[in-house]
Length: 96
Image (cartoon, rainbow, N blue to C red):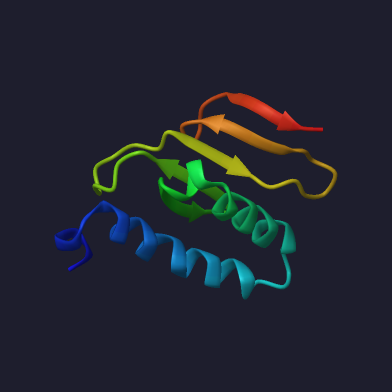
């Protein structure tokens, strides 16, 4: 049904459960902080988002066949936050 309304509705429907999941995970607050920071950034909020293994992925397309443009892993256990091009490709940025 959201696809009938348009891509903005699809993106909104994707973000809502991600934020709820992140907020409900007290064992890994870094992921919740990453999720809220990403949602607060208008350029990221407009992208299709998903999470997998505590990584937040973004795509410019809302289709199921789209590929990930950028993936972000929050800082944890002394490791910096990492931004990767696509999900498993090289690191393109770190927060030290």
